[in-house]
Length: 233
Image (cartoon, rainbow, N blue to C red; front, top):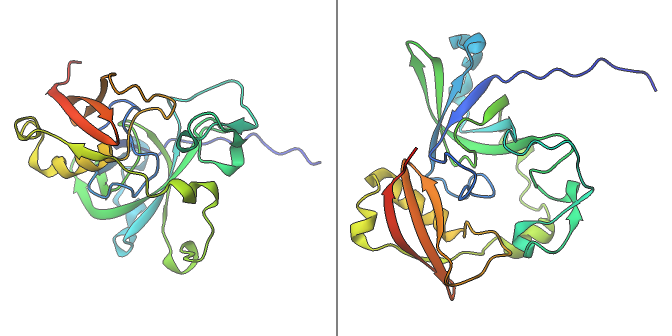
């Protein structure tokens, strides 16, 4: 086999989202369209020409780095969360972050292109499933005529696609969340942020979202928010 040069990949941008940590992030993109994020290019790519024509597309593919899941070893099988965390599947039959190469793929909706004085072109997107600061490796337009396959099979993931919790947030607590982010929080919580192997109804979980710390419990398919406080750095 002919030897090839070692592949060098540059980080072209970073995403700014409401998730400072991994806990609570939707497990797939587009599940919560109300989640708003921005993509800020690295200094080398802050040229308005890099996005010329991009406003003609409604959706984009983001190719990004699992920067918080770096490992020196990989396993041929992983345990998908929606299968309870105990059933193993082949790594290439899943979207697990624990892969031979820590690369993720997400589809997002493009809402606007802003030309910022200091940051160059900034992309405003919706539906991202990325942690704040995640490095973006490439951006490609979503092409409906080749990227959409309505008759495609969804494998074992099809069995859990409709899984959701009922969410109860007392109104005084909900008022602590910015109006434009309340629906996004409700949908994020309905997707059940807990690890699949944890089901203790008395356990209180916490997740960071949009500068706030949200604490909740889950019992009998209902997620009840107990506390929303300012997040401490």
